[in-house]
Length: 156
Image 1 (cartoon, one colour):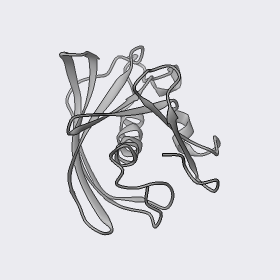
Image 2 (cartoon, rainbow, N blue to C red; image 1 turned 90 degrees about the horizontal axis):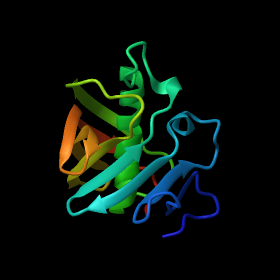
Image 3 (spheres, rainbow, N blue to C red; image 1 turned 135 degrees about the vertical axis):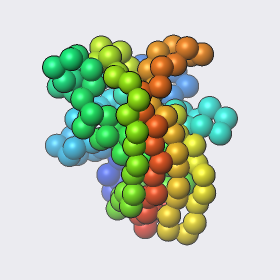
């Protein structure tokens, strides 16, 4: 589905990852753009949201910095909601985000958030997920999370 002309986000076929959609802010001076490119796809009941870390996301151990991981998780929740069709663009906010760090993420390899939609109401949605790194079938779990988020007023 194409976003409205006034959309704050673009959601389109990812030219670098066939079968995925790119999810990016129109205004590249906003925080979300520091994580770009972010791509998403639905895999059964899971939305997979992918980010390729850059040096600016790393700490002195050459792992993805914990703050960058938290930022990615927060953005991934909304990219997943968009992929699920739960919301479109604009005005959404995080109500609660609980995260458990389990392992370090290599700053030179892509990471993914695997997001499961638990419930949706008129204004809220509830998700849980894992941040993983590695290859299909051989994932290393980096973090687990649970989130409650408030939808914006514009739906997909």
